Length: 330
Image 1 (cartoon, rainbow, N blue to C red):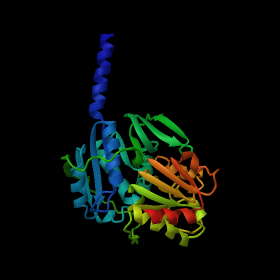
Image 2 (cartoon, rainbow, N blue to C red):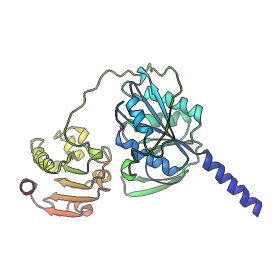
Image 3 (cartoon, helix red, strand yellow):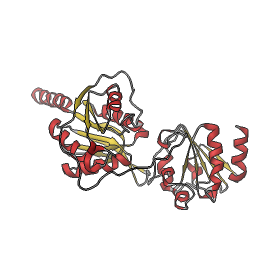
Image 4 (cartoon, rainbow, N blue to C red):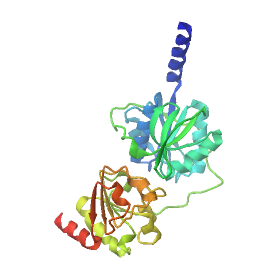
């Protein structure tokens, strides 16, 4: 019996030493996307060494920043013209080369458009099943994620030799950006240019408002606003809070606002301190993207609207009267 216990202890200790996680950083060459910090926290919860891959064109500032993040053991830096635009076709072979050299047990990225583009390709190449949008880590092989638009929570155990995982950042606190002293090394060299796709250009919308996924306060509008012009009511209210402005899929599909404002199962997942839903009925797809908000305020003229079932504070009123009045009193 003692021999068996000893073997189990040795095996557990060996696995603990062997665990290692690669986090694929999302950045703009100069600064880290905050979601990467949440992903590093998830990696730390898995245990073992945490290595962060920073790939870009002139990504020195981003790599220096991530080396200072608490809990980061090593930073792999890859600077190459092939990584302009961060296309998944060029990043995938880089991650595979790093995996071949360092034999990571886990590969993580944030559950953003970036992570959802890159990690499924990596999983396919490694012939493993990707694990999407985890909200908790139970152990090195057991994770928690939501299913059925957030109406059920699934605990899954992966038997794959390499776990390829996207992380829902709203469920993990950001790692501290100081206190770390990660070693900076060069990533495996190679020709990572892709013949499948080429980055041409991008046009970014500039705004003084906070980015949706990182905002502490979000004012969100739905089809009840009746037109895009009426979203000015929300912008005026958001100015009082220093808040971001979001929208339901119904409002986006109706053409009221661009789709980068969409919150929900097929949009962005948010968890601000305060979420104000104006003229949003509360379809299940929308609730999946915002129900983890700390405080939810709903304004809707329909007392039977599903949004009131998840709201902490509900106001049954005509939004065209209530919102200007609220704005005027702030």
